[in-house]
Length: 175
Image (tube, rainbow, N blue to C red; front, top):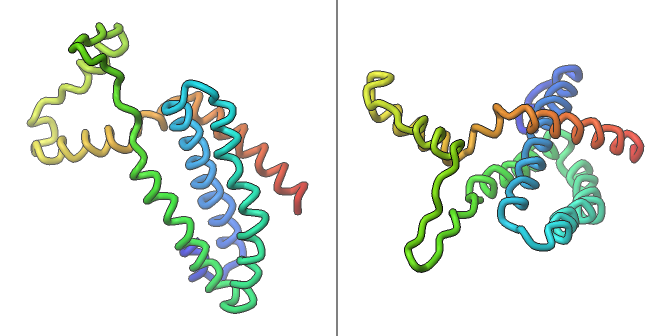
């Protein structure tokens, strides 16, 4: 959205707002639902409903704020302000960590499944793989922290596609 505020071509602005910004918001929505599922095992439907209450807040508070921004700052200033607000999603997403593996208090550790053993074997990376051990450390830290394996899952992209189509049809109906 910040990039769209600096452009003047209507087609490029439309492309940025629909494809890039819409996909980013959809991806963050799907990842949020995934993390809620990781943290809560009991009454998960109540948790999903509580997390969806933000949509009501959007219609009640943010829409009049956008109109106020448009009247006060124009469309370019509104795009800058909305882009700054949406950047907070990235900060919050970086702070959310997956739940730690549950361990009992007596030191008992559960045996690894075949899939966990294979992923643990794959995590061992030789230190001279790319010629610099610092690069492999940064790469593995980034991969583990951001959970980039989610983007290689076909089920993630299918859910994102269905959610995007649903949100587009719902938004068109509202408009």
